[in-house]
Image 1 (cartoon, rainbow, N blue to C red):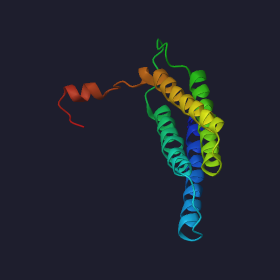
Image 2: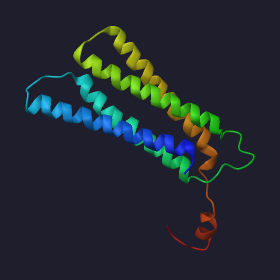
Image 3: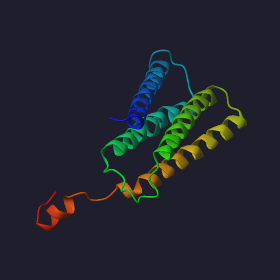
Image 4: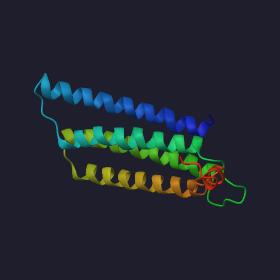
Length: 151
């Protein structure tokens, strides 16, 4: 497993732990201590698990398992993949932190930061799969399918 893959997968696990911690806090706040919390906290919890953990895991596994880029593939660029990793990591972290803050203290500028982080996350995902597009191809399976093998 190479470095970029490890970054995506390990960061995914860290985001999962943060999401679990937020979920435990919400459970205890509501059920044990009867402390209210804002909808932004629910969104932060859901988002860090689904985008932070699940999407980063998908990206890491795709990077690991998809066939190598062909030599003439102009889209695939390991440096772009590393850039998308950092954009995803920073923007997901910022969105989570600012949504948690926003759930306790509503300020308009927090919404602007959350929206900007969301836009960066979307851009990173699009850039990642733009770069990976050429790696989504058959490698040997078309020969087996032509012989009648079913998958």
